[in-house]
Amino acid sequence: MSVTPKLQVRHISKRFQGEQGAVQVLDDISLDAGSGEFVSIIGPSGCGKSTLFNILTGLLDPDAGSILLDGKPVADLRGRVGYMLQRDLLMPWRTVLDNVIVGLELRGAPRAESVERARHYLHAFGLLQFEDSYPKALSGGMRQRVALARTLLPDPDVLLLDEPFSALDYQTRLFLETMLADTASKQGKTVVLVTHDIDEAIALSQRIFVLSARPGRLKRVHDIRLGEPASPLAARRHPGFSTYFDTLCQELDIQTGQAEAA
Image (cartoon, rainbow, N blue to C red; front, side, top):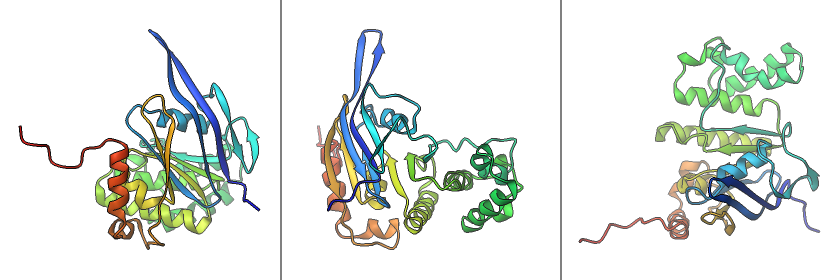
């Protein structure tokens, strides 16, 4: 008996009207993510990754296709997902604590309960001593930790991530990848990461969906089998990591070798 995936994307298509006519951005995209599974979506620039992300978050409507959550069609996933972007979008007039609880505040949750839950995440993410600070006083990595805590606090069914760590230095990125992977694993979260970073996708994911150049179509699905690494850094050290990396580079037509002499 097969298990129903947590999230199913079925035959999604999207086009935009341009000056020279309609532009097909996504064409018949289908993919899924199981409960507690971490998957990534990669593809060349302009393939429609961000458009697909915006459809999943409910910011855009597809021209065709459907989204299912726990096997049931939903108009969109607003209220059922948490999402993070490259920009942290923290409100500069609110403290760290008040930024973290904003989602529960909008739902009308009692403040005392929201604060107690928020402090749990602030402690886990090493931010408790900064709860009364404002975003301008924080580093980029600290701001993204606040954004991650804000995303997790409402306890969403699914986490949607659009290159949340791409603007950070490598050391900070590794730290936040580990924090994300540990938290998602412990809480059994379903995670969908949209990224251009092949390295990051392999280190974090159980499966990777590769999209073709525009119009974006599902080109291939890779099962990532690196055992159960202790961290994303450990995954990068696995003997099989470079094989996946080379394969994905070839599929995306990324040149990794040295250019031939003229």
